[in-house]
Length: 300
Image 1 (cartoon, rainbow, N blue to C red):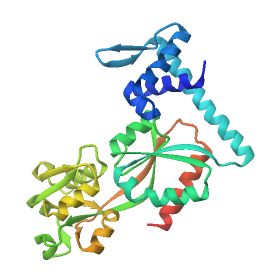
Image 2 (image 1 turned 30 degrees about the vertical axis):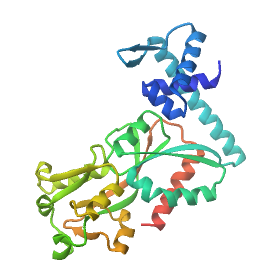
Image 3 (image 1 turned 90 degrees about the vertical axis):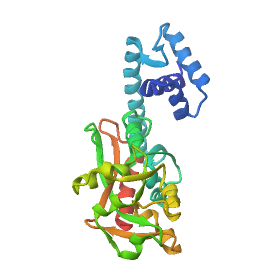
Image 4 (image 1 turned 180 degrees about the horizontal axis):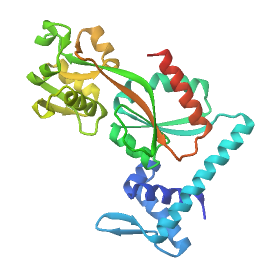
């Protein structure tokens, strides 16, 4: 039995989807189906039930999945132990990050890390915070970096950076002309461009409003967009105001295409590393976590 078949099976078992497994493994769906069928022929039994477009593990599949999890954990432990003995820092690490972090924080950080450890193969997956936490939970990625609170107690969460959020408007907007501070209740008076459901930014803003005794339902949401870049474009066109991380608008402030106003009281949020509590920590992850904490201290 080849490791490849077991790895493909293990991915389908985690995601309970042949399509998602194909995307995660960069394979076609027929190739994933073929590998699983080969494993089922090896054991001479079905490992998945496929009914009404739903995939679930059979009792035998559950047993194989448990063993596969232990086998791959032992592989990681073996590789880590050997590299500890040889002093080698190499291998592969799959990181997931929410959109704001992936676009504005990670490129410089990962670039410096790659320069220090050129033998390490880094892969990056981008989603909103909810999607990244789900990937960590299902072992699709080794390490997630998110911008929203994480409630799953089975995950380890380490804050790496405090992010400052501000109100952004078009330069000609009346808020920009009236002063540099915005009270939370003023946000309800203007069309508001927001992120999609599941976004860490949207979740943080919603909680901020609740903490300030403002019903989020009173917000005049005029557009729901999937990235900071799309929101900036809408605000530049004076279609509404928004709240964004200050780290995302440096270029626009310099070009005077956006105006920045401080919230009163201010709004900050943590950027956090998220990983499996029980997952064996390989040397690569240890080095990346250490490097990232150092980088955040140097770039507050």
